[in-house]
Image (cartoon, rainbow, N blue to C red; front, top):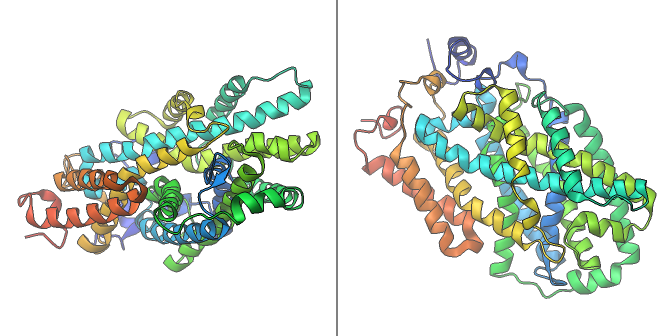
Length: 465
């Protein structure tokens, strides 16, 4: 009887009983997958129309001057989105076929102990993003409170804490807790953004044209640095693609899944980046919520937009920033899902998200993305090479759950390749992601072939003796 990927039902039966991990980390059965293609697309639109992406667009404008003009911005975004969608479709395949989460997928390359290091590289940035999105949402919640109280209440920090506690409560219900609201949020926020877009065009077109559209910009290193930054913004998400694809209903071919990523990310990411750059050009303020309050000088509309910014922050955190680190904490501590998701929320409270974005500049957010991308690029390169080149898409999933199996311990080749790739990436931080991917990929192939000749991690690969 085959134990390869093709025998999905057999594998699932063999490893559902005693895997040594919380049941949330066991493979998802076909019956447990409740997300259809349309909902999946709206999920990524809901993830994309968030204030973090808008702030990234605002980071194009530093001290009132755009680093890239409008044509360079769009070109950088389209290139980044094309690469993002491709990697998503490639890296989601193992999770989609077998139902395993990202933290278990990592064992294939890094081993059970080695996966602790690489999973933290995904979990820590997600916790910081969780805190950042909550801070932006808290800023919007504060705008609502100011409108309701006539300006008597103005405490962003209190709103931040309140919103974080609400999210901890909601996240107790798991991945599907707010699935029904993702579609509503994505549609309403897109309509709100279109309204803001029209206001910016009619009332601020002259200053936007001067500071962004006709900016000199650059097609050189700054252009490619923003391509890397736009990609790096999604690096943590497409690295843990298995966490999302395992929720998607079975029977969707690979090319269609690629489309399920490309179209919503293009629409949502493109719109938010554009409006973020326009807002920063028009107001000189990098915090989109504060810029909104200036551009939309109407308390009713500000209330409406701020309300959905709050809901949008919750939605994007549920999709991208809560589940992945919760799985990591569950794996490392053996805690159940609910205690682990509570710890994730509390850690996000202490992530100091206000340091990343000041009113005058969102450059700190860009630097943060580039730094963690140095490690995530090498990891995704290692996973793709392992699955597609070294193992030819054939993995014994049951072995990934065996404490004393062939994936026990750590794979020194993977750990070294990750560190080599990250080290090389920091040589030219503007091109951090692509350098890390290429160098780590080459290093991993060479190390697997020529080093550690007795390594058990060669078993089942093209380098097995």
